[in-house]
Image (cartoon, rainbow, N blue to C red; front, side):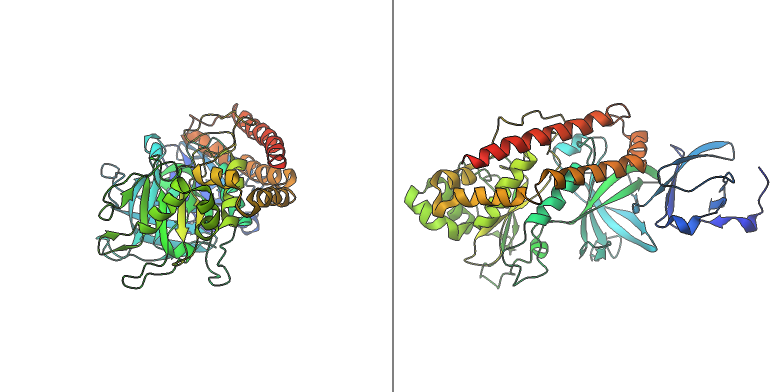
Length: 468
């Protein structure tokens, strides 16, 4: 190969790439292939410059084997944003945030910040690929936070990096999240046009302390701001937000534990997120609602339930969770919110990884026609049938099956994302680091399982809803 002078070298844009010296991987974010067309010699660092064969064509679908200073590297191009996080791996835990560094590159956008971070999750804490809670700080002491905005996501200081380690294809959660956002909008959207009924996500590729760490899901958080719940005025309780935190009977609307609850942020499987005023926790409204669902007479339930839960939202949530086969999202892994005083509660789904043929630990799930997912509230709505609830449920299923839940729409969403991850070598890069759930021979099997599971599930649900 002819020698090329330093003056002829095209320098990769600062921060547009990361180099993993341990795995000998170079990941280069290039948003427009035309911008590097005909570039045959690339400088990444002072000591890492590569010469490219004259007949090479740049493509996201290829991996480039290059040698530099006696070391062999794999060079990948990516359209996804690249994130670098740095922190002391001996100090990080799941309880308290420690100080770290953060950088983000996408297109011509570069952001860097001091962050506080911790590992997040329950079961996922046992996985080798960790998820992270991030909080952006103005200083290393974390006394003041700062808001950051990524692409079309919100501006905020709290973010989640979800490892998706228990989801073999790394695509289920994103498809499920986007699907919920497409079918459900807050019933009070006319009053709060910025309100969301869930959260938005973005795929990114993460380096941890200069080591490639794989593809992640960068997620917004669920909080009062996200849902635009009304702020409380002094002692007047307006907006409310509770997280279905554990299987203790409360979030599944199966039992109520009576105790002194005003000094405790957790009760009956719930965790209160808003409001908390002067270290006091306001549970009265949720306790009253739970009593109505669990202990009321048939007539009282029919008379009051439509003023206590938004029926359209409850219908969407029931249908959505059953379509997903989300076994972990009826008694846990959702939020219950209230926009304002005297307003009904509504569901917000969360942690949508154990869906469409896998359970929360990543193991395959094979039921399709044997189980209807429900909890005490959603089951009682069907049993008591207030104001012809079952017919509304059937009508909504038919409406969704004509569009967002149609076979054509659902399988297209799956195929587009699966093809992207396959063709653009995202799966290949992930496999270089994480080989337990994903490998070259089984990848197609995971994809086939998802397709077969969903096809059979749709047939079953069509029959179930038509016979309600």
